[in-house]
Image 1 (cartoon, rainbow, N blue to C red):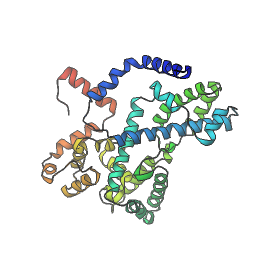
Image 2: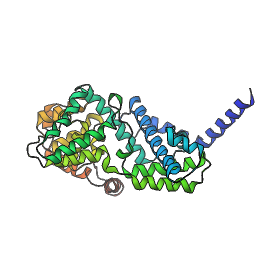
Image 3: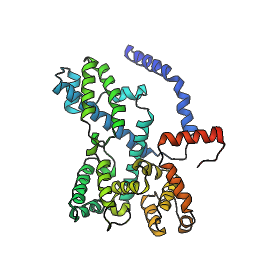
Image 4: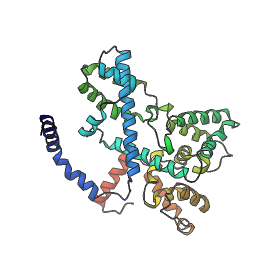
Length: 344
């Protein structure tokens, strides 16, 4: 065995020794999942691809600011800033710095959005989906028409092949940008010969210039708000509004967040989505139509099951789910630890 291979094996062995305490954690997650949500290979692949795109864009932007605006002369940073060939993802994945709850939750929501987009494309053409927004371009209210155009433009930057969600910095919530920017900055400082302080300055500029209002989520929220004020608009439906606007309109109607609603669609039988529709007093056939449009085809909701749901109970549950996450978590812990309540 030549020395290069020997050194490679030594490095791998040392790396595994450092990570050995985490093997049981990884295996435990595979053996004993804590929820009934299923994550298929496509979701995992889409989440990784999306994360790679996000890290690459943040990395390229930091390098661009450092070399163009701050005058940093470093060949690696110049190369990344020009062609976007990222270098830090592998280092960050190995370190576990990207395995933070807020980042993982964001990746899950984006992966599930890709799933929903793929499901819709099995039931309606891409052309028909796009026309769901273009119909608002001729709206009598100029503000609605302008908001619809803004959403169309934003969506064009974040829709990949086959309905996949492409990475766009503008579409990242500020807390996710912050959570990823600093690990990327630290990784770049280690990979390059540049003093960390210059890269930190570049990172701070990126954070200062981040404008979430230009992203799809905010554009959809704006259009949903305007449509809510239009008496002629019917209840939201994914086949009539498209996925993004449908979720935004449903969020305004329910008091929940768009991310919560997307999460509901990944759960067994989409049970919480059904409860939410019942709380909003959707007619049976309308609720069934929405369910069929978003479902993977493995679950069945019947008119009898939906009709038997107690609406007052559904309203109470949705009100609880709309509370801040910190409150909900504390409420559950207190109920289990001290009150012995069966909270749903």
